[in-house]
Each structure stands twice: as structure tokens, then as C-alpha cells.
Length: 412
Ligand SMILES: Nc1ncnc2c1ncn2[C@@H]1O[C@H](COP(=O)(O)OP(=O)(O)OP(=O)(O)O)[C@@H](O)[C@H]1O
Image 1 (cartoon, rainbow, N blue to C red):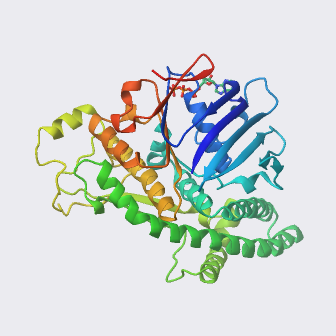
Image 2: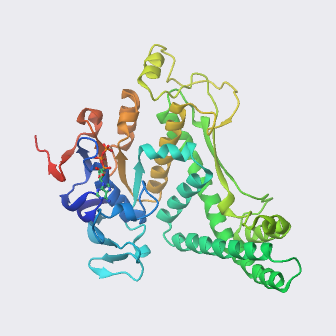
Image 3: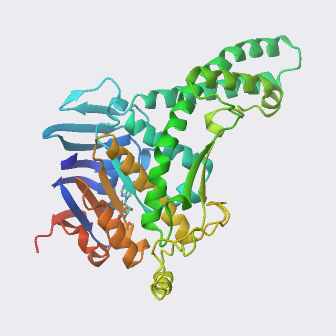
């Protein structure tokens, strides 16, 4: 799929912008702070109704404006659809397809699919477990848009249940207020188990599907690394035993919730469920594996003719990436997670739009070329860079100059 036209009204720094795009590679070049990322962020927003940079919509609306509009013509299998979203701060957003309003804005999610690589991706590796859960959930929703509903149902159940736990925990033991809250809590326990089990089952399946892609993507972007150097593992907040199906998982969640009732009442929060799970990222070290993203490390490895070749196993320990990996390894792992998502979406028979936002400046020449080669075949690749020379030769294509609020095609 690709976007053939992008129109913005009062989105970020743009009062108005109108850009005709083509399949293949398009680079947006301009000095810092000129609005390159704002353009690709708008396309990403259409895909998930969320930005890769901010958690709320408010910063997306141009300062002083009442609402923002993002409209894109999206071509898929030769057919064009015009998708539009109206961002209304403090009110619900509205979405249209070919000018017809959709019942809910979220019905737009998944119609255009993007995979974004950006410097913020480092938080996937170095950030909190919630960053990695979000990574999984965003990918789930892109592949199966219906799951946006499951995720928001789960969040709602959690909020209700937490407020009940607070009430029940605060009420005097044995009082009628506590009895009442406890009996209502039973209802929310089963809601938590049912929606939680659905989310959990989906995440477990996703991680199993993603795993092989992460290993091979890491081996490609990290110097001298082997396929089994990078691994991911889903760590639930409870012992699952052999539970895998939704009913089995619901049963396991319910049993654990009952077992931890006292703890939950004491602390006034839900301690069991997919909101407490972790996606563990680990690296092993095949001999010769060094994932330098810096030019210095690259130069060092270049001096060693064995580096980058098939590396034998060192049998070294597997370590969690967070807290142990070097900056280069962390960055390579983050790239590998994005590349793996892209490969998985492609294996579903779709070709998502790839957005490489300011990533080349972070990579040495060899890694740049390697990443460029991997993504060059995508149906549409949108690249932002402050300096044209940072965009690898393999990504030659259309070029736009972004500056002074304007986006101009560079035909030079
Ligand atoms: N809601 C908003 N209203 C007005 N201006 C905004 C808004 N949000 C961001 N901006 C402006 O947009 C500009 C940033 O644009 P953007 O992030 O696209 O820059 P960029 O060209 O990608 O820069 P860099 O190369 O540094 O990443 C900044 O000048 C910022 O002040």
C-alpha cells in the first residue's frame, strides 16, 4: 500500500499542507525543526490514531487552532480510498472514508498500516515494561483492528476494578460498605479474567510469531551477531502452567486474582493481568558479535577481517538487554523489533508503509547501507533527514525540501 496524497490542516506546525506522493522511496530533507517529522507523523497517526511521539492528541493540533485534519489518499491493490480524521481536543475525533463518516473514529485503525523507525524506539529497549506492552498491543491492533476494542475494554475494566479495590480496601473490615464493594468486585474479577485472557492469548501468540523474525533481523543489523543472539520472551504476571487457550487463561487469571485478594485490597490496585506483564528482551553473544552503531566501533571492527562473518557460538550467558546491553546493542535491538514487525506484517500478505524518521544519523555507514538495503524493496518508504547525504544511495527516490512551512519537491 502507499499514500498518494497527503493533506493537512492545522496539524502540528502546518496551517495547511498538500503533498502528492508516489510509491517507492521519498525523502523529506530540511534543517532541524522545519516540520519533516510532522509530515510522516500525520501518516502514522492515520494508521493507529496515535502518534509515535506523544501520548495525547493536544500537541498535534497547531497552537491556537481549534481542530486538526489529516487526510490521505491510500492506494491498496490498485484501489484508492480517501481516509480522513478530524482531531477535536476535548471532544471525540471524527473519521471519514471517501467522505462518508464512520460510526467511530477507531474504525479507521488498520486501514493504512505503517511501521515507524525513530530515535524514540530506544525506549522499546530501555524504557518501562509498559513501552514494550504498547509495542505488542500496537502491532496486535494493526494486524487485527478488532483488538483495539478488547484493549480499551480491558483498560476500562481495570479502572473500574481499581477504584472498587480502593473503596473496599479503605472501608472498615466487615462493614456493609466493604461487603458491598467485595460482592461487586466479584463481577469485575470475571470481567478482568475474560478480557485479560483474550489480550493475553493474543500477545502470547504474537510473541511466538514474532520471535524468529527478531532473531534474524538482529543478525542483520548487529555486526557479527547470530540469529539466536537476540530473543524475546513473554513474561506473564502469573504462573500459566500449561494454560494457553482463552478459557484456560481466564481460569488461571481468576484463580490468581483470588489468591492475591488480600494484597490487592491492601494496595488498592490490580496486581494480576496483562497490564503487569513484561516482554523480556535478551541477548547472547556469539563470538565476534559486536553491535557498534558508532563510527568508532565500526572502524575497530573493520580492522578485524573476521568480524561480520558467521560467528561460532561462544556459549556466553544470555543477558537482559535492559541494564546490560551497550548503546549500540540496544539500538540494534530496537531496530530489530521494528524490522521484525515489518516482516511479520508482510508475511500476512500486506506491505506496510515504512517510515524512517531521522534514523540514519544514529547509524554508521555500514549499518545505514544494510538497513537501506533491507527496506528498499517496500512499496513505500518515507525517510526524513536533516542532511541529504545521510540518506543512503540505495534509497534514492523522490525528494522534498522542507523549510519555512513549505514542502517543495526537489527536482534538481
Ligand atoms: N502543535 C504545534 N503547533 C505549532 N507548531 C508546532 C506544534 N507541534 C510542533 N510544532 C513545531 O514543529 C516543529 C518541529 O517539527 P518536526 O518535529 O517535524 O521537525 P523536523 O523537521 O523533523 O526536525 P528534526 O530534524 O529536528 O527532527 C518545531 O518547530 C515545533 O515548534
